[in-house]
Amino acid sequence: MAAAECCLVSPTPISIWAPFGALFHLINKKRYIRKSQRVLSEASDTQYSFYSVRLMPPRSSGIPKDETMRKKAVIVFSGGQDSTTCLIHALPKYDEIHCITFDYGQRHRAEIEAARELAQALGVTAHTVLDLKLLNELTVSSLTRDNIPVPIANEAGIEVPNTFIPGRNILFLTFASIYAYQVQAQTVITGVCETDFSGYPDCRDDFVKALNSAIKLGMDYQLQFETPLMWLTKSETWALAEYHGQLELVREHTLSCYNGIKGSGCGECDACSLRSKGLNEFLKNKKRFMNSMRYRLSLT
Ligand code: ZN
Image (cartoon, rainbow, N blue to C red; front, side):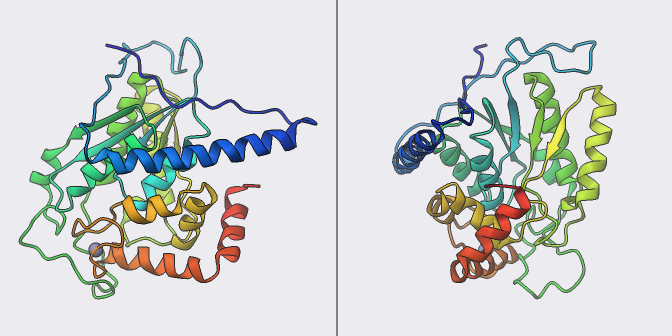
């Protein structure tokens, strides 16, 4: 199988050329945004190609031994606002990005096609859709059963909502870790968030850290889980998309809605409610949320 060829980033050292570097970066960024928007508009007319990845045999050492030491990351990628923003944030930081999308027979399975289009538009060359239908068979939830209605936002009460799928993030992160081991990636990125979340226990920082420790022990592999959105509010997540010049792409082309509607969605489910509330707050006070997002992520 052919090795995956992915996104290349060349860090620029600080020097007297820094102002020119910044200008060059700005021009390049604008080109990149234009290109991603053009590709996205063409994506629905083209057949998306899957790229084969090079799977490595097991090693005796727990240290990744990549022959070129390329920085590689695997992203759990649903095509929603959070994982897409994570991808946009990660692209300049890694030499190679692998997106994994899970098909578990979800009600909002249109997100899989959205993920394909977005990965292509953003220039990701390794995107894999993994079949996880067994999860659908095992779990009863409004996201895995059509005869269970998705709750209207704010009507779910204080209990875990019926959109919760027990074990979902445990499985997603475990499969992503297996994949990362095989392609010798050092990092797994997930867009889970403890600040503005729907009450899912597997979005909490304690859980992610505990599973990361278990994976390191169980695979004898120094894999790091990254959760850039963990302490951001939804408004700050929108600010992060704006920071990277991709607010409109995330706003128009991602799919977070539990009822499978792209963009602003159905407007009624919990996912749509969180998304639109965060966006409205961000648009009302961009400067404030840009500053707080920069502070939390230590961005300049
Ligand atoms: Zn919705």
